[in-house]
Length: 57
Image 1 (tube, rainbow, N blue to C red):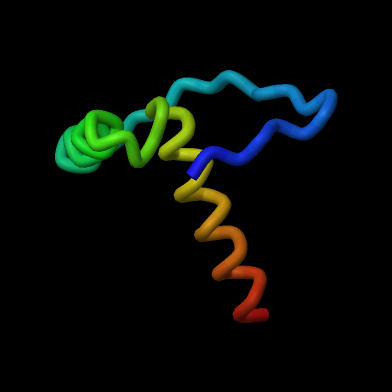
Image 2 (cartoon, rainbow, N blue to C red):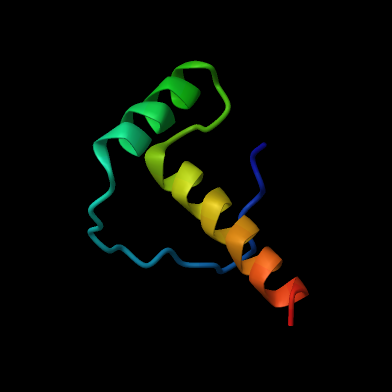
């Protein structure tokens, strides 16, 4: 699922460390065309987590 960028939206570049098992899972999903990039996968995961946390308030 690819969401269109909002007009004028900027990305914040940061370096993160992730578990190797998660990294390999993301790479496999990129090969399956589920995500376009590692950043796409991380953004989708964080958006889902954010929505879940906010809906439990």
